[in-house]
Length: 138
Image (cartoon, rainbow, N blue to C red):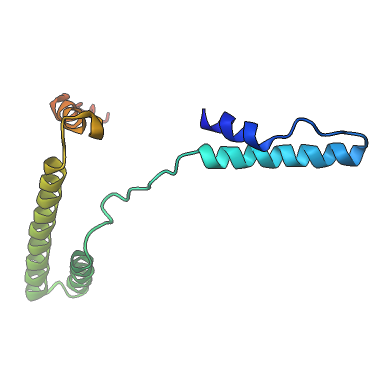
């Protein structure tokens, strides 16, 4: 595999080891070669953030809703509660719309050929899988 290929190219086996210093230097170079091969052959993992990748407008509306909720908690005034409810309902509608658009985009990009590793069939298998119910807490 790729790790072995890199390691074979970077290691020189015809090195005279006549002193302790030579041995220590070669052990150090061997360790560095192993680390370098491991770093090069390890794939980079892309981190996905769940729920935090909303557009700036949505994040601003979430901040505004939190401010309205804080004001309502402090005053308990009916007009503050009305403003909070309106902001909450508008935010929920916009988040649903964004989720719907992202799901439609995801589904439109799926294909059933080997170039995309049969992503359409994988998504279909996931959707057809029965939903597991969590047992009630006792």
